[in-house]
Image (tube, rainbow, N blue to C red):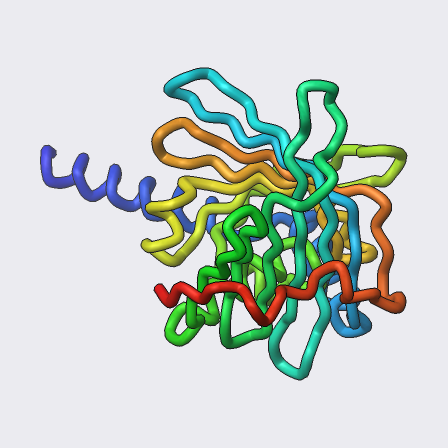
Length: 234
């Protein structure tokens, strides 16, 4: 009887796991829409607001800025710049950091010390791309291959119908940095309007995107990193 009970419990558990892994019709439709949008994706630009929350001191640090993501062959290129907010709530006159990724090298430039930190993508290229395409041109197929997806249903943000998806990375190294990520994706355009990255220690970062522009001309001058900056290889 005990053996039979164990077997029954095992079968029920297996069936429950299989059901959890099965995609709902709604999620399948969302991923299919993302596949269609990705096929026509060339670039995206957006204004961004970051709310960085540190749990241990219960503190929020706000940054604002802009970014672009551009498809270049089989990789994605990205540029971003961020401004700290002053006591008056207005952005500083100069950026606090400028970020660039060309598919092979991640560059993080800090104007205050005129230093650029260099991170060669190498074996991490797939991981970098999975974050870049998380809400900007990535296909539903790519999302499904890199993340375990929990569809939390539709939600409207700024008049745009989005699908709220909670993601757990299939890459253990990513999972050790972010326990899960929640995104609000406009599947018709393949663009995120909001993302929250949750760290295992209770910290989180909320990114809110606005003024989204798809497949337009990109002025890359503001994202240029000075050639005279001191390079630090990591």
